[in-house]
Amino acid sequence: MSDEAITDRKGGPLTRISDTLWRKPKLLIFLLILPPTLWLGIIYLGSLFALLAQSFFSIDEFTGIIQYELTLKTYGELFRPSNFDIIIRTIVMAMSVTIGAAIIGFPVAYYAARYARGKWKAIFYLGVMMPLWSSYLVKVYSWKLILAKEGILNWLFETLHLGWLLNAYLSIPIIGGNSLSVSSTGTFLVFLYVWIPFMILPIQASLERVPHSMLEASGDLGARPVQTFRFVLFPLALPGVIAGSIFTFSLTLGDYIIPQIVGSSRRFIGQAVYAYQGTAGNIPLAAAFAVVPILLMAVYLWIAKRQGAFDAL
Amino acid sequence: MTSAIRFSGVSRHYGNVKAVDNVDIDIAEGEFFAMLGPSGSGKTTSLRLIAGFERPTAGEIQIFGQVAQGIPPYKRHVNTVFQDYALFPHLNVRDNVAYGLMIAGWAKAKRHKAADEALEMVALAGYGDRKPSELSGGQRQRVALARALVNEPKALLLDEPLGALDLKLREQMQEELKSLQRSLGITFIFVTHDQGEALSMADRVAVFNEGRIVQIGAPEDIYYRPEVPFVADFVGSSNVLPPDFVAKLTGKQAFAALRPEAVFLAEQGHIAQVNSVSFLGAATRVGMRVDDVPMTMLLPKGSAIPKAGETVKVDWFSADLHVMDRT
Image (cartoon, rainbow over all chains, first blue to last red; front, side, top):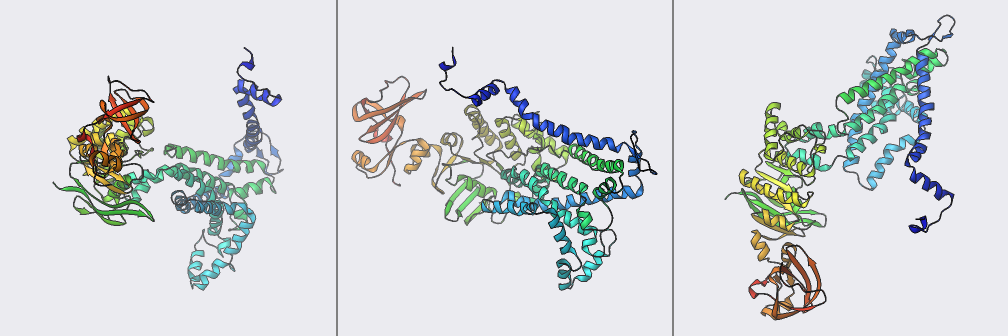
């Protein structure tokens, strides 16, 4: 039987291509998957492996020439007190930023998912996303002004006659400093501000999927609101919290601009990578530093999975 | 008999929308009480008022003699089976059932034992380790039932619990719910839009329409003696005959209900134009017009079946014509 028996439609070359792809679905999948595979495989994974390879080389301390022999010596250098401090400092900062973002982000996300409708939902998205539209540098510098000794925050404390409180806080070692803009607290606040949209949006998405009847059922079975949060709402939102924390944690681990502009002179991993691969020309050590966040994220995800964080997915 | 739930002039208005409007109910302890009505009639809102998910804008609700005003859901000794079951997806079946007991502070071994017994009661023994997502609709429904009953509530609220089940399962669950209620002896308050379900299960039925209760009574009363045209139409799919037509028959200017199965083909009687004939299995439904009044007739298996377009004569016993005083 000819084609005309079931169809009277004729087509040009485009139709013939469509027909061929329809008859060979595997070819279609192959064609669709080819570009992302090339992109991921060559550009992304390729550079990652190049980085990984570099970290197993070492540098001759006298000549400064890279020795292309596989060694764990460079990784050993990470454990020198000055380097190890950088790692610990960065991890503590990333954890604080993540926890802070989750604590502030959750109620915002909850409000948006549960109560905001129509116009208010649009306002929510605008409010959360708008900071992402402006330049990152502009935002960080404006925070430097806010946190400076001559800045609005200091002025506010003085006006409220609470200057002594701010000074007392700033005199605490490690988190304090001469002013907020040169303290670790300042770095923390700017990190928190810059990354919080990445925490709010995944939590909001996960809360969006929790039917309201689930919370009512918990209350119906005798759970007070705090218990409902602990046993139902939080476990169900946990995949969103974890997704958000992957963003805030890894973004903080890798950033080298914010601590450069706002904060004390104590360095973070990103700054160390920047310094070693640039002026110092110590690519192996920079690479070894860059592997640390990757390892940390792998460990973090493994623990999260073990703890059942993805059970509600 | 003490009353389990009492509504006195209860209203729930949302702005201009009167979801529940000046409702009085008195549900006795141990009763199987159905709230029946079309969607948006206020039956589910009434149930949610009892559970405490909604607050009345007027009137008073008493639960076992206690005024419910200001008592949050988690302090009320009633439990709900939700329409979508609302099982917790991150907990297995056993922990779902044991949830209320965990909140009440029972030790793990003790509450798991109670949960397993409750699962046995709903014929789901051995399903404790599964996740709700691994169960069929009917099984989830039973888990929701076990989760509510394990807390030994004084009243069980069921919000269209059988709505998502297929016909065969629904009929089976109707019987199981009924026998469960008899053996436990606790008050069941059951919301449904399915008149067959309400009539076959409940001791008493409240028919809701537009936020108000239009009739409360035993299933037979609701079915055979509707007080208003809405009940006749919604509950029994009765023929609702207009006042002019009824006046010609009885001399009384009022609506009347006539059950389709009470109409029969006769040698002498009213002339009827047959419009449609549908085969229903055990009976055949005939749609027709008598004196320009649309009417349906249910003919039992074995009787002569007219064809669409034919003119036939039909009649009924005057005792079957139920004249309604209210409109």
